Amino acid sequence: MKREIKYGDIFEVRIDEPVYTSGVVCRLLHIPVWVLKQLDREEIISPRRKKGGSRLYSKCELDKLSHIWYIMREKRVKVTGLKYVLEMESRVYKRL
Image (cartoon, rainbow, N blue to C red):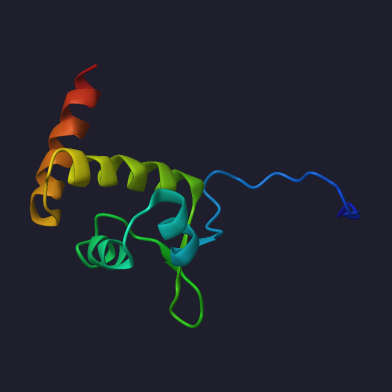
């Protein structure tokens, strides 16, 4: 049975629910749109698509994007080297 939502109610959004548009992601993380598109093209991040083709990101993907953007910006890793860095990180964390 669904509960009626009233003005001022607080509701939960699951961490894996894709609700953030690419424009919102760009504003929140200060990431250029071209980076999001390239990460999607390289299959580093795979956001869900709305019927019109626009991308929707979840909180989990925002966290991953924040980490990716840090690596790209602070460590100066290009998208082509990103897959290697992320693979090495996942191997290290699997051993822990």
